[in-house]
Structure formats: structure tokens, C-alpha cells
Image 1 (cartoon, rainbow, N blue to C red):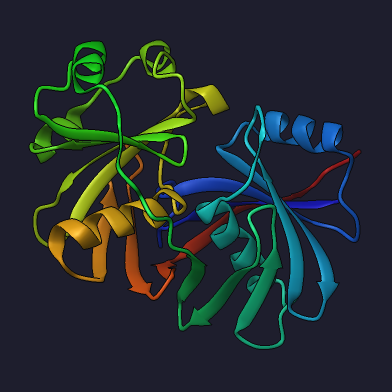
Image 2 (image 1 turned 120 degrees about the vertical axis):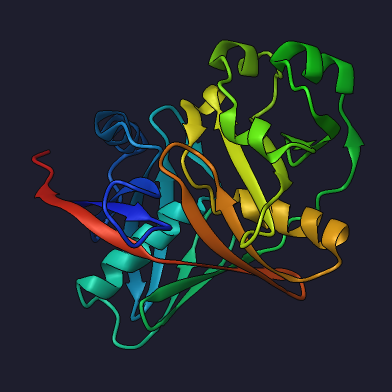
Length: 262
């Protein structure tokens, strides 16, 4: 089985978010998929199975669990499908645990057509989060899609965060998204933490922007953004809301190609 490593949401090596991608006529067993993901030890490993021309089934595994939705893993998979000429045109459709996903290529950019996730506004304890993580400029926090979203007023504090994964685990939900309004040229910036899923900090998270798009649409009264995820690797995502969908624009680069001997 061939396998590739791709850096997603970047146009240069060793930036963005790395993902492994495999393509085969059938998926390995769930146990083997999870073992491969643990062996690769990247934020996500994507498994792709052709269904019919330009239409594929995709699954994603972190080193610990299978996940329902993964933006950078989808971008990485689409990049390989285009690169290896699995696709005749410029459009791909995927079946996933979350439902149908769509991808198209425009020049060197790949655009993910994902569902817009409405944030809601279920309260989460401001004092608990501020005390636990020592967030000095925390202005607002709430729970949405089993993820805590925290807004800071100070972008520098966000960029300089050094969170203890054991403390983040005490939040007792799937993950934590920390966000703030960005300085030019970025509309907003973010960081994403998921130690309960085996990812202390995710370098660039497409799926998180399905939530952040809705949140910042309400805050900034606009539907198109340039976003930056301020991890140590960093990554830029173009975000555009169209109805109940969100278009995530980015690039990707292949870093490694090999063969799984299993």
C-alpha cells in the first residue's frame, strides 16, 4: 500500500499541518487503520478508497481515535489524488462519517466545500477556564459541538500561549479552540488543542474553521475572511461562507512518498 506525507495549508515544506494519506481498493481493518495512524504519529492519517470516477470514501484517524471530520486530512488527500492523476478534472467528492464533502481545484489552490457548523452559545464557566489555563484576556467562552471556544482580546497572548496538555484535558470535552481578532492582513487568528484525541496542539485545523467562520461572521458582520492558525508551524486558510456551507481555501505540498509493508 502506497503512503504519502503531505503538509497541508501551506505552500512550503515543514509548515502547515502534516497528514499521511493512503489509497487502496479496500480499507484495512479498523484495528490496522488505527495502528498505521499510531505508527505515522501525525495529527491525522487519511484512508481513501475509490468508489467511482472522481468519487471516494475517506476516513481519518489520529494516533488514538477515528474522527468524523478533518479539513487538513481532506486537503492532503485531494492533493495526492490530483498529483497522482486519480482525477480527470478539477472536482472530487468524498463520502465520510460526517456526510458528503466536496473539493475543487483552482490553479494551485484546493478549495474544500464543508458544512458550516453553527456555534450556538451554550455557556461554559469563564472562571473555571480562566483559572485553569491562566487566560489573562479571556472575554468569552462557550461550548459548541463538544468543543470549548474561548475568545481572547489580546492576540499576542494567544500567539504566546504555552498550555499544559494535562490541564487542557481537565476541560472534559473533545478540544479547545482559542481565537482572537487578527491584525492585518488576518481577520482572525486561532489555536486548537486536542490532547484527549492524542493531539496536544493541532498545527492547522480546517474543521475548526467550520465553527470559527460562523462565530466571526456574527462578530465581524462579513462572510469572507483570511484566517491564520498561530501554531509553531503556522498556516493560512481562506474562509468564505456560502449559505450553509463554508469554503476553505489552501495549498499543500508532498513531503514523503513510500510503501507500507503490511
